[in-house]
Length: 337
Ligand code: TK8
Image (cartoon, rainbow, N blue to C red; front, side, top):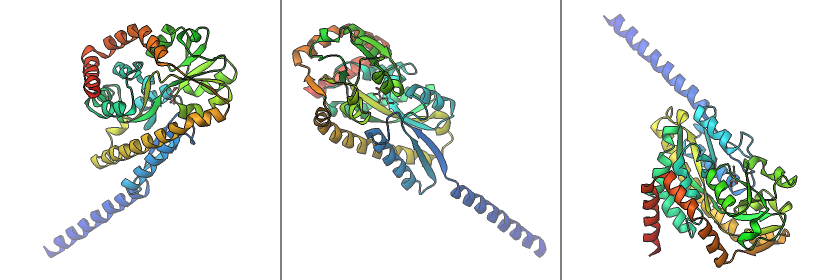
């Protein structure tokens, strides 16, 4: 009897040692997360990616490790989205506009002149409407963690000053791979060509296209001023970025690991918006000093553009669903009162 008890105890200790040994082996090998993005390391996107990586490392006590890969080295937005869906890559950040082919509700954010300022953008994106749109990704194999700010988009080109609607005629303009952007700029009279961001710099350099549209930050960090002489401050749409996680990867995480990503995501978002806004506030001066000729679109001209785009808005409303559209308009009206 004594003997049996003894061997049981020894056995139990043995198993205990074995499991703690396994746990240690796991501790040594952190969970590796590949996080891809399109801009370069020196951009606002790159800086925020670093904050996200540091935060994940800190909150997980080193058990999770985010390897950030910029400059579209893991692929364009669209390619990375597919890699996440298939489970070949864990995380990324990119434009919501490039997700419209996967989740049609994302087109809500492409509505020209939807938000008047960043307070409106933050309130809608971080509120119930933004959550609802984000949640739609799950059935497509993606988890939307948080929205970052890409920013208000402005037009650049190498051909001429664009001060009024008619000036867009004859400009070959790169747009994101997104039907709303394509239709918007076609309706405004430009010769719109969809291209991934990763091919944009060389397309501008070789003059395959004359112009593009992006926030000041990107025009600066991607050195578009080297090929683009003319900048029009049009603020024609507010562009969000969204941090995505592969659903396949997400479903294999523990509750604690998910919490780390959620918390770190929020910290990165708050940092990113502050950093982006600080940079944007001085970017226009920087761009002028780089030799860009800046034209501020007059309110009357912006009004004429809006007018031209009423059919686009109607099409977006149908595409994203009338309920979502009306809820957004009502919420904005309430905020503007
Ligand atoms: C970066 C893009 C970029 C977007 C674009 O991958 O494509 O013009 O504004 O920020 O998502």
